[in-house]
Image (cartoon, rainbow, N blue to C red; front, side, top):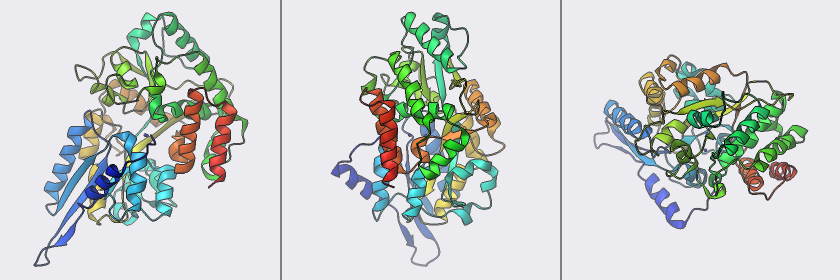
Length: 427
């Protein structure tokens, strides 16, 4: 679920050159075509690295005329590289897609392929999650892992601070933060350098304060006039004023290195982090033992008493793939079908890489924390898509940037909403 840096000329040249690897050439006899699919993905560490290598090798074996050219990119690069690559004459064939407003923009610009007729035989096997990657009822991308955001926490540090159980309400959460600080423990790690981790807090508080109709209509009307939006910033400010984060959090990355926010929790230097279902896999690669910490636990974002939101509402989203407008078909659609095949989906779950979307593969998830996340995903009355994905790219960018300013002490809750509204008016 996903950061905005200017690309240098060298990066643009590299992206274009890589995408030019896509070829569709017929043999002299005209019998069989040889095709190369350039696959941009964001798996650079953890259990997904081997899984993706296996996926490419297996698909190529089953389809001798197709070669998969995988191009791993660090997650933070995608938001800048994909829009530029799609505007070129040689975009990647397969690329990471989080659905929502970004996919709508790509579809309106004619930069993604309509997959509807290709996925029709199997798309119902992933149920309602497919809707997040549709535009006007047509399938322009498919998810392969869908989850929800919550707090990954160190059970040992909670016990050390005298916290008997995970907080269920916002006042209980603030009380837990205070207890951790009193015990000399950094309560929360955050990777504010990347901005989107900051947005998780504001997004979640909006989801916990605004009614479901308000949340849903905002993605269509871009109207942020309801007082609950500013209240989300007010609640966030109370947390910021409590000083819960590690020293230097504004310059800390989320997932890169042992000193990242994920690394701090994984190595026992902070008590918790608000992150997605992918976090155990990220943490594993950041520990000396290359293992998911045994002390790790998970709990959902606390409810806000007295709000108009449905109790148990969650923030989430998923990872998926789209085929660009120049991708050879049906080869590209066949590759996406393989990623969502039962064999691959079971390994997505069993390796802890993600939460599978294919019906019948849910029992492949063995990690107890991920099984808890899966349970909450399955029983939540309402799951709000990450707001920077639910809205257009322009509004999502403004939202993340404005919230980052509040974290840095450079914007008030009212100013955050004003910046988002200003971006919405330009649409």
